[in-house]
Length: 387
Image 1 (spheres, rainbow, N blue to C red):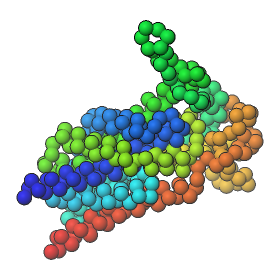
Image 2: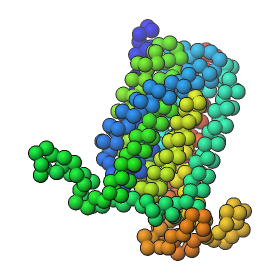
Image 3: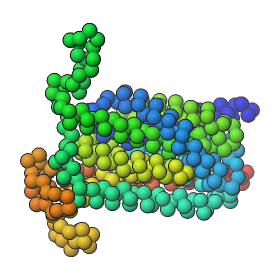
């Protein structure tokens, strides 16, 4: 009987990890895929490798929080299987709509539902976790807004990353041994910028592993059915499968629907979100890349669009200036001002930075996914206890 339940639990864990892979791969590699710097298959392969590294190292701290700190009792194997299905169901709904849901919120919600039903929820720990869920998007927004308003124009002038036509690298067969060489149109700046994009993408994948690997297996680890090492391998395999399959739609969503931004802006978003996620995961806080990524994008656009007016006017609404969402798509020949200086509105007359409807869809799914997993878990375990 125990073996059967464990087998069902492994299937449930694979289901959760599969959906996590569909969500997180889009966040980590969506900008690079949207800019045609890397194919979806290559992105999924890199995602799998660095997810394993993140889960094997920093992810253990998050595992401890999910497996033993949120509720005052150990999660039994049967209860752990049920929790995993609720987590996966909440994530699956978001993936159906092509929206990366914060998987850590969905996981904590399902475990909290069990704690509420059994009156074992540790409200102090939950309060601490939720406080960081509130602070994280605020940090992402204001980091993006500050950079977009005061730093981005000068950075864009000095370090603009452009993608040329043709391959980035080719094999030079003129010598006895074929060696990699720049493509026919590749510049040193383009090669360096592309290399940075790949490095930061790997950094994001590492952060995703640190925060999301525990989400797929923590209930099984808490029950003692699996030790941490095989659980991390199991989660990595499942996340990798999701990255190679359903993540293709999510990468298109992140890379194109939410934002059509230059690579420099993508780098700022990726570095900000990865740093926030890695730092909080190291502290054992279940957090998601989604929040920091999306809100940094919005912050960058807001900061660039409000440069012609003062920050005080923008916050108070004293100015009649219209918020142009095309802030990161300034014309190449538009005048660039120095760091901290105001600029003319001419540089802001461009296409939209992001789709407000897409942002609204993201925000709504962030609420629906975790709320659904919490409600389902609470209803299930309450009913089970009654009977």
